[in-house]
Structures are given as C-alpha cells and as structure tokens.
Image 1 (tube, one colour):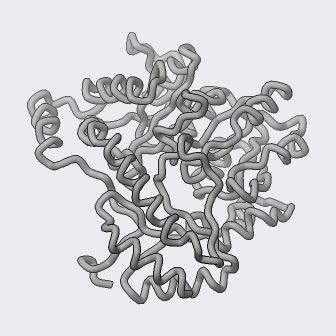
Image 2 (image 1 turned 180 degrees about the vertical axis):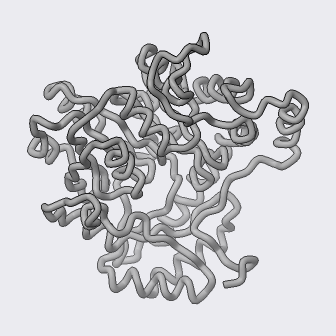
Length: 362
C-alpha cells in the first residue's frame, strides 16, 4: 500500500513542532535527560491538575505501570482479569509470576462481567485486574465492592481511559491503582509512556521508589525496584501535547458521533454501550454480526487503502501460553467479530463517510 494514500486505523495527535522545540532546547541546555527530571515532574503536576487527581507517577510505558502496581501491592497467586484486551494485560500478570484467571465479559460493554467474578475467586486469588475497554469504564462500584468483601486488591488497566470520569471523578482513582498508557496510539501520548494513579500517598511513594531501582528521595536504596523511569524527551512531548488534549478529545468525539450517525441504519453492525459523559472517544469499534462479514469488510477496506484493525483478536483465553481451560463464549464471539475503524484528529469527514459506505455495503 502507498504510505501517502493509506488511511491507517490511527495517527498520533501531535502538538505543532514549534511548541515542542523549546522543551528540547531546555534539555540540550541543561543536559538533564532522565532520572526524575524537571520536565517529568512538571508533567506529573500538570496531568494531576488536568485529571483532578492528587498525584500522578509517570513511568516508561503502560506495561511498566501495571508491573509496578502489582509489585507495589505485593500481589501473588491468582489475578482475575478479562480475556478481551491487548496481550500486555495478561502478560504483566504472568511476568510478575502471578496466574491470570480469565472471566468472561459483558456482551454490551465488553468489559469484565461483575456477575461472574465471585465464582472465579479462590483461596489463591489476590487481586482483580479489569480493563476499561476502549475507554468505556468498568462497573467500578460493583468490582470494588466485590474486592472489599473478599479482601482483594484492584488494579485497573486504564490504558484507554485517560480523561474519563465516573460520577465527576477521574476513573483512575478507582480501585487501588489506575494504570494509564501514553503510547503513540493513545488519545494523549508521550511517544512511549504511562502513569500510575492512586489516592493512597504511601502507595504512590512506593511506586516512585519501584520505578527507580528502589531509591527513596534521599537516594538511599530502601526497596526492590526496576528501571521504569520516563525520560525528559517523553515528558517534553507530553507537555506539548497536553495543551491540546481538550481540543483533541472534542474533535474525536465529533468524528465518533459522525460514524455512529452514518452507520445508524446498518443492520449488520452494532456498537459498544456507553454514556457520552463517561467516554473519551479514543477508538471506533464496531461489532459485526459474523466474522465472515467482518473479514469481507476488512478485505474491501484494505483494497481501497483503508487499514482497520481487529482490536482485540484473538481472545486471550484462547492462547495456549496462559493455560486457560474454560471456554468463555462472549469474549470469543466479540473478539472474532469486532473491528476498529480509523479514528484520529486529522481524519476528514469525507473519509469517514466513505469508510461507512463501504462497511454498510459489505
């Protein structure tokens, strides 16, 4: 495919280069490129203010955010999670020598189904790790309530959910830790990056130690740790991009709603259940009535130099590396039939209408 003509599933939202360059000049002037640098500290403060949370701890990426959260909470044994997510969600559980236990998803929201969680709890269960899929928040009230009753911790994979609020509060404050991703494909990006958010100051202090080899603020090693630091260059890009985030979110919402309008009468697709005030419009997922129709639409779109993506396929419980035994039919059906259509700030309305016309005729 011609790179110039292809419509990709996403493109990063980037501030004008002229707004990024002054931060780079500061880095070149000071020579500070990492190790809890001033730009990263500033990004943490500005993100906390934007999100309305007491504290943000930036890390190298969203995967590191979940790894550090699992270590900070001293989790072991089994962790209940969703099979409908990117591979990183289950990988971090296994990487930290825990066992992912998959529970099926809700057919409307595509999030972990709270009705099925308690049946999966065993004496070895230490935590629940749900995902706010495509930015649609989980039923945090029920999940957190289940965790409290059973003495479990909750780590939310909020990779898609930056800027999402529930009952007027950032969804990142739900559970024990909320883990964000600032990857280039996300609604807010630092190229690579992520963050942990918690309302517990002591837990946040430990997260900061763990991301930097176990050093405390006095540069004494007081804990185990890893190298999960965010660089100053990533923080610089984040600061430049953060100034444009409200505009980016508003633009994506308008484009998402145009998709919904154009496909409203299409009988063979349906959409994720959501509330507009609890959504950030970071993706454009559509669920086809069959995998055969999805594949036909994917082929026709690609023939016309339009590249959608099958987020998330296959369902994680089907992968042999995790040893899942029980079939989870809803996640498998959703994973087989879901396709994310292109959605990004610079995508033209005419291109959206063209994409919808192709989908509707498949």
